[in-house]
Amino acid sequence: MRVLFVYPNLNTQMGFNHGLASISAVLKDAGHETSLVNLNEKLPPVPSHQDLAERIREWQPGMVAFSCITQQYPTARELAAFLRECVETQGLELPPLVVGGIHPTLVPAEVMSDGVWDYVGMGECEHALLELVESLEQGERRDDIKNFLCWEGATRPRSGLVAPVDSRHWVHNPVGEFPELTKLPEPDYELFETDRITASKGGWFSLMSSRGCPYRCSYCLNHKIIDLYREDLGRGVGKLNAFRFRPAELMMKEIHSVLERYDGIDTFIFDDDLFTQNVEHALEMCAAYEASGLKVPFVVNAHVKRLDPRVARALASAGAKILKMGIECGSQRVRSKVLKRHMTKSDIIETVESSEEHGLHTSAFVMIGLPTETRDERLETVDILAESRVGRFRCSYFFPFPGTDSWQMSIDAGQVDVEQLARQTTFTEESALDFGEEENLFIAKLGRCLPWFVNARMDDFAPAPVSARYRPLVERLLAMDAEQWRAFEPTVNAVDRELSAEAIAAGELHYAIRYNDFMGVRSDFFLAEEQGREWFTAAARPTEHEVERAAEEVMG
Ligand code: B12
Ligand code: SF4
Image (spheres, rainbow, N blue to C red):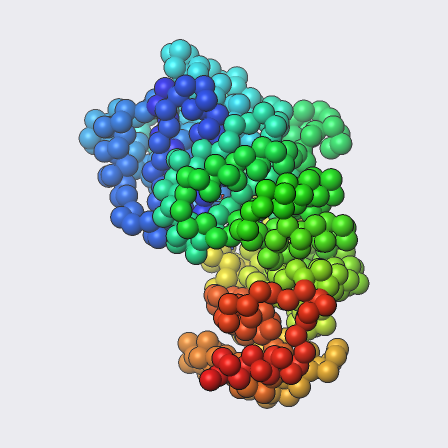
């Protein structure tokens, strides 16, 4: 059968959709045909609603299957409603419309109640979608396929453009077992315009060598996935096989075939939730990577609670370039009570230190504007960055995803701005929570100018001449009222460049806004990168004098 996938990747960071790549590979292996309508601004021309209808008319798929995360769902729903309209207005013959991915998994009933879908997929659907495709091909309308919420008798009532929504006529099937990663075929990267995507991501190519994560952070989907499978499969978490790995041998085969097929790859990024968590798997992956002689650097995710020194060494030796980790917030209370991220300040400091000692550049995720967080607690986030001197940090405004525990917490705290939440598609420009006028203004300044706050605080923890340079700027910033801030905000990058250039010239270690507006990067790293030098191992860490010399080169 022909399956037409739709990925409404509009207004969200462009990327592969690993879920679709995996499902498509399984369908193709079973002899089905797949194709993709990928909507993203960076891949023009962006197909219009009508283009999608024409594609269905011409290609005549037996199913149209959408995949989406929360921010992409409104577009998916809009497209599906448009296609339903085309049935009435243009006589379009429409096959079943299916939707799956993170958002439908988190809030399936809410998605189903929109009335536009025939099937709503929950959880990992490689096997489930194949079963659905094969049953439809046989002309069956089954309503008992695991992982799907659908209409009784799999027949959507067709009165009106959008069906009347009545949950009494739905069948909510339980999820089936998690797919074994050892048995899944190589992801179908051919589904995408891979060369174009790689080029527009600056040569970064995303891979996944594992699925799942043993932690239960309140803002992430993992606790909800575990609860769903635990309830439906009736087994404890230890017996769910939720945290799975693709053997190093299969990963290396995939990496080599990707390098043969696609041009312009100069960094691999393992998008596994936690690459370093399972020591055995991480060591095997690093050993295989190093033994293959590949010189392509790579990037991985780690948890600060668990970075085995053997793994840190193996990563550095195999060519890992950046180690990413969630620090999220400096306050112990907010980390443990709100985020359910149980780690101490010393876990954070020690992991950053140990990674850097092994020559790994560290990158921290932090969130600003968390529910119930006080101003002092927000400033603790500044302090943990200043004290740890992490290699870089990526700052986003906290966003509560529907269906997660942090969503409920934000509602309970009375801090959700519902309208803002509904229209927001990124988390790096503004907060979706409302803390009152004064605090909202503070959060906006902190989120946009975090590197300056960190620079200003660095000498509270270790000698840092740069703090004196940034302190007056932070004081000026804090004194601005809303109108003054609005006028100043567009100049932030220019001011940052100017001050950073002065700090470079003076040989002062500092953070500057680099690569994108929400990233603060430590000067020794970006200077090395700008000069095309290798990142240093700890033993070869630059002295102040070397930083000064490098600065002189950059400044001419
Ligand atoms: C890799 C990853 C990325 C990569 C690639 C994203 C991509 N589109 O593939 C990058 C770095 C680009 C990225 C960016 C972002 N990400 Co991200 N990312 C992930 C991560 C770690 C893994 C996703 C993954 O590939 N999983 C493995 C695959 C196999 O699973 P899957 O995609 O869920 O697909 C399965 C099922 O969902 C289902 N399925 C999927 N599609 C369909 C379709 C049909 C028809 C059916 C039936 C089933 C089905 O079957 C699939 C196969 O088993 C997840 C966390 C996680 N553990 O899932 C976060 C996650 C998806 N990301 C998230 C977010 C918020 C983002 C960003 C918005 C962040 C930002 N500030 O910009 C951007 C958006 C980018 C985008 N266009 O998607 C959130 C989404 C939360 C939500 N409720 O929507 C997640 C869940 C993390 C979290 N906070 O909980 N991300
Ligand atoms: S450690 Fe990361 S992937 Fe795991 S539950 Fe927490 S946020 Fe999600």
